[in-house]
Length: 536
Image 1 (spheres, one colour):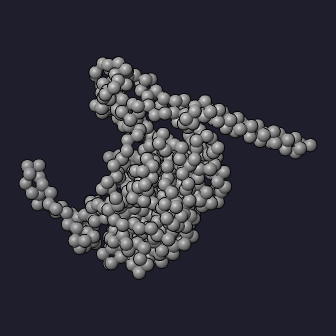
Image 2 (cartoon, helix red, strand yellow; image 1 turned 60 degrees about the horizontal axis):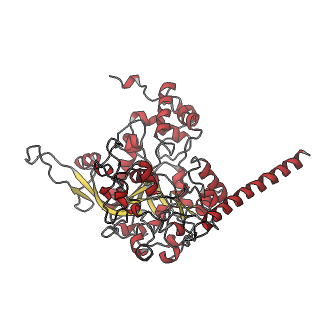
Image 3 (cartoon, helix red, strand yellow; image 1 turned 135 degrees about the horizontal axis):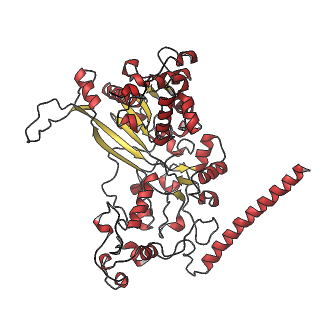
């Protein structure tokens, strides 16, 4: 009997939910009918001043510390001056409330629906072999693009928040049109077979670095807000550890991959006779996340509906259209990007006859930048860079891929809390993973399933040398169809003493090692130093 009642209750709840969605859709349609031009239901007509940014701040409003001069004006004038014929932006001084009305003259639009009047998303055929068939990615809510918007979220990941702040402060026009002349990639990364396989690349847009070229018609003729999500450039890398390696003779200056740095100067302008060290000639690419939701769901072995619901609920309901717009399959998540560093000719990456050395590295700000010795992150990164240089000098190519997954994607705050627990609770290797689980509920959230996408984007078909002890990374790459010939870890003599806790815990947990095996019973013997031992 209880089972029948539960079934009836579930049916009623489903019907109520369906009625609610129907009511919201009808309301949206009603809103659109009240505006003959059909635009207001999606976005109200653009105010003349929406393009006249910066919109000046009233003198009585104190600009925040650090605000640029263009964000506030001391001239007192009426709002009418802003709308007078021939008025200039600096002629008006208006309040925040007035500025809000000028920027966003209509009602707040929390969400949209597939059959809403005026909405016609630009078609996206993910995995199409040609950019014109695949179509541009358009997350913009600007009036010129909102009707054809075909992606949720915003460009620049978490930095989109700063863009919103700049618009609110009046330092940036929301309709600013970037000038992409002379910004084309500094090296060629041409289309690869994987670009036309919708299952190989699902976490970013493979055409992202070619947007101004392949979608020129959509940008210039149709006026759509289409933006690059990848930038490719060249640079010289300067690291003190590489300087030392060259001085020791571990690395050789060849004038091509590794170059001698020019002499430095003293404060009086004279030439400093000290050895200036070396620098590395590299190519690099910054890649923003652009998720194809059906592909991401399949990669993780869950339904698209569950993925959408989890992304909606556990981002505080930030993206309601994940629920109300199942027709939109692309999502730009508010997470960090990845950076590709190439040592040697980029064309060699897709040439199976060339040797390729790879390091996939997840961000660790404390170690990579500030030299914390509690982990092996920076030593691993430096060792991998040295190995990439040597591979390139042997006639091959080196690749370091740097992902923004701080603290195993748990974040830096959680990581530091774990550090506190470890140091106060006895920092032994047998407690290493348990300490993280006690605070975060999980020992690792990096989930490497999406990681191989960047390798397929570069056309990589085999990896000769992989510097990593992570089985998650190794398995993800191999299962994606890229064989790895040799894998090796960092030599013991490069490990900071306090990081032995991390290494031994990982080895005992089954991570790859070319050294001795460590059992669970050995872990209690590996203990990190206490805070007191660091005080002198």
